Structures are given as C-alpha cells and as structure tokens.
Length: 296
Image (cartoon, rainbow, N blue to C red; front, side, top):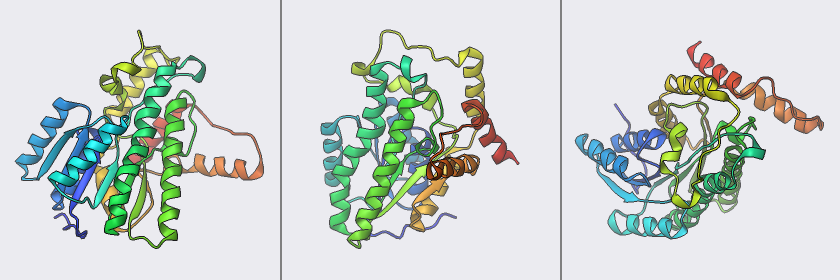
C-alpha cells in the first residue's frame, strides 16, 4: 500500500513525464494521492500517459513542453498554476543523450544536449522556485546522473550537462539552507536505467538537427551490446520508489546502485592528492559492472 502524501500542496510537476523515469514518477506520485502535471515534448506519448493514468483514477494534466525554450517553460508554469494550483513537488527530469568523442561531436549535438539537460533545468528552477519559496513548502528533484560524478569517455556533452545539473542542485540546497527555507532539494543520480534515452534523437528539435548523425567509435557490435544491457537494466519504477522515499526523508543524493562508488572515491582521492585522473576500463566495462552489482 502506498503512503499518503504529506505536503499541503499535493500537486506534482514532472518534466519529461511521458516516458522513462518521468513516467514512473507520474505513477508513483499519482498513487500517493498527488495531482500530476506532465510536461513533455513528445505529444503522442504524453496523451497516452495521461490516458493510462486515468485508468488508475489518477488525476493528470498534460502540457506540451519544450524545456529548452524559456517561453515554453514560462507558459507551462503559468498553466499549471491556473489549471491546478501551487505544486508541492517539482521533478526537473527531462533529458537527452548522445555519444561520441569530443573532437567529432557536432556543435549542434552540444547545443541540443546542453539546451535540454542544462537550460531546461535552469528555466525550470527560475520559474518554479519562487512559487515554492513563497509557499515555504515543497521539494525540487533534479535528475542528474552518475555522469554528474564521473567523466566516462565518449560522453562529453552529457557529462558536462549532468555535472552542471548536480552543482546547481547542490548550490540551491545550500542557499535554501542559509535562509532556513522549508523547500527541499534532491539530486537523482541514476546509473543504468531502462529508459528510452538511447532513442533520444526522436525528440530532437529541428534547429538542433544535423544532416547525418555522426557515428561514434563504439562500432555496431558495441552499440548492440549497450542496447542489450539497457534492455535488462534497472526498472524506472524502482527509481521512482527511491525518489519518493528520498523526498519523504529529505535526502539530497539519490543513487540507484553502488556500482560506481569505488570510482567516485578514486576520483576524489586523486583530486585531493593532485594526481592525474584515472579510469580503470571503458564505459562498457562500467555499464556491465553496474548490471552485475544489481544481480549479485
């Protein structure tokens, strides 16, 4: 049995809520009694998600949202306030990914990933934070990544965006703490989760498209291996449960597994000692390690 919500403003705003972790968050908060406000750029998936939630008698409101657009986020925020009310939970979750070496990554890939993953978060904070601060209640969940703590090769733009999201979340946590605000902050740092991020390009805005997507250096066999591993990775429903519990406990860091913690410790030790960075193995090795960690 799911717990009843404890916030006065039982409204949850979830960006990127039509798929993956975002969709699972919609279900988790909906089952806890929240009204769900979903913002997503993928309109067919958005409509389908609202219909599915309705079958469980979850009250959901859908909004077409391009998080990379300041005006789109402003309109989304205003619509939520007018249609539903002041949110108690804001999950800034929308995100995209693309891979490849830094020197062969297209400028438009950089622009796209940073526009969605970073500016989408910035626009979300700018619009929703004042509302929560005025209510002196609520919680913001930033979806960062294990890539916000480590710098795996072949993921330059994604790593940069998720490091930035994490430091924004940490900075906001300290700022709210300094003024004794009741608004909470959490940073979700998932490892491998079964989402559609490998197919992020389906939602790429026209202005960020390139004539032909560049092939990275993994090769087709390696790509197929990554896809297979993703298909058997952690369920986003499990992640949604972790987020819900962490928010209830006012916990800041939310990790989905411990597979990368040793590498995080090594990184911090090398920073403290002034030694050069070191990474034992490549991305595939670490992805596989994450899966094995959960299976054992």
